[in-house]
Image (cartoon, rainbow, N blue to C red; front, side):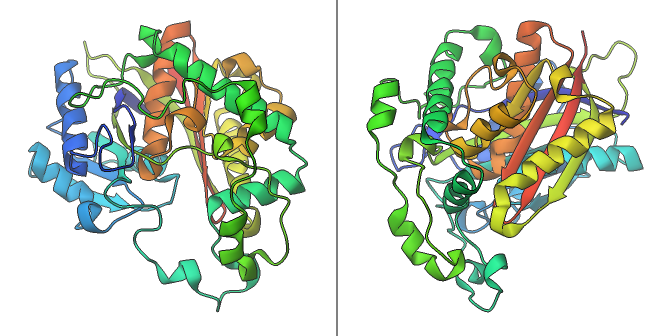
Length: 384
């Protein structure tokens, strides 16, 4: 793909509660803050052809086409078009992928793409979609919350509690260390008084994780008809990403002009659908498709940002794929930092570019997965 990433920035993640570190902001203000930061970093994000934003809860503060609202708030060129999309937890990466496709097709020279989610303002499942409770669907196609899909996957794939404890501790430990590693947070932009990841659980230990009990049995009762049978519940709150606020944004476009510098080139992008009853597997499918398109193998990736969609997915990756754990989520992940749904993919892209810079690496991949059998992955080549 002749598409280049000129910059990718992200906010810190704030707790999704009224006194959270980002809760006083409006979603468009987070996006506007990232656009302003890009300009301060020597880019020109205002004269773009498009703004594409992912957001899952598109009601209330995030309704009214949040991409258009953000465009108007940030005073992006009036000629730029703007649209919002909802692809569940993959939305932020899907937005970047769609923008890349527009560049390839022509007609778009530069685009801003990413996502924003403020769960302090629009809670999980806050749009109240009929689908969440519609029993007219066949059981295999009915909606179940991702954590129940995670529990069911852990049982089906025999991912042990011990393996999930280990990945959760790794996420917390690496996230804490990243706070003292300037290169790994070089593209994280402070917002107001929040300059760190607010959701970190600094006192997490192997012993505290082992002492936690499975947490989602009561939720399973609500979705008993859709689940079609009991689950061996294995996930605790320690294995689940905190709900939070956050945003991520990438500036992408065609080949650099003389004297212009990009951070990375997009080599491949893939999306995948999957069995809705085993929804979290679609990210793995997308990962394999993107690597095949790029003509590369997972073990050739210098850095991997794999969305920690509950502990089962990252534990399965490390168990079943040929990948060096020291290259995966080197700055920590969602289990520690939180999961602002529609923003996640874009946040991971920003984190990947920082991680590649920090190790002087060449190839990297972002992998995201979501409910209902949704997955996406993007392979990039960092420019030295």
